[in-house]
Length: 197
Image (cartoon, rainbow, N blue to C red; front, side, top):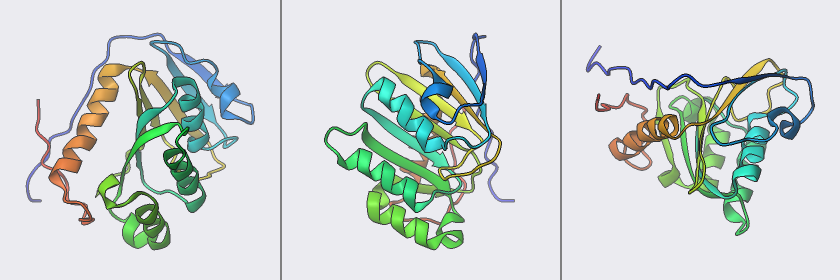
């Protein structure tokens, strides 16, 4: 099967987790206040989308660099992300995308929209089904692990929000390695040869 790529892992110290079933219709109420060291686990039945959660986190953290790893994204969500990036008072200061390599052929219109709005410099592809977000600024290092893609999806989804600098750095490091290894505009999605620790 070609070169073997070893799995990457991150281990965190035991943390207190706040577990919530989202019965409310918006991300703000479901997430609540994010405090330093927060570990929040939410199950939602589609009352709000992942993008709503991202924007609520950013409302609390203030402007930050964002990485989104997703299997798919829809035009409406891409437009909302672009508005935050383009607006001088927006909450996103820098945005990078990691999407599945099939996105190019499976959703060519959405992929074209992503490329038009953000440019190839901000996008990398690989064979992935992992979905996560990092939100980083000088005060916060938040990692979001989720089952949700960046599109409206009215079904049971999980969202885990962690103010965890080590986990955030781990996820950012994986994405950074993909950005270094893959040429801009090269959407063939080869598995990376990530260094192991």
